[in-house]
Image 1 (spheres, rainbow, N blue to C red):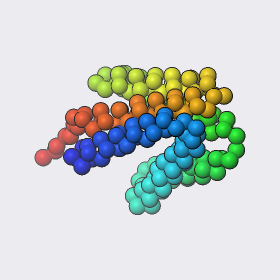
Image 2: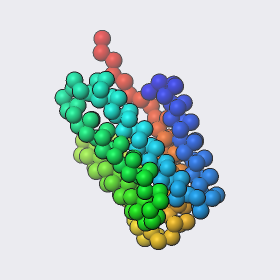
Image 3: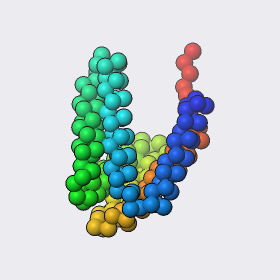
Length: 177
């Protein structure tokens, strides 16, 4: 990773932590902020995947998968941004599903890395376990929006710290001469 990439990852982690602290300070509006954050990040991710598809991936093997995932991300983003007026339980269930799927994927990737005897399998595994615990806590406290916002903020702080730590990982580059 380049120095600029490391600096951007560090700044992104600090901004995520600052946003989480702001939402913890004002948990009453946290529900709307969570829906807005999830919608905007999914929309940006979907648009960037769509741009990647039209610039490069359409000529690659499996490029159509990039197109499908981009369209699904954009659909979820528009759905998330449109459900701000519906009962809070739908967004909270969406949040539980997001943490649960993310945790399960990290857990499975960690176990796969362990099989291949990779050195960083513990970090992925622990990240998956923490995300699953956050999903379980969100499911337990689904009726209390303030507690859900605080749990989400704890998850954001964990994600920000993970990004900050990722900025300091040594990158392994193989040079072929």
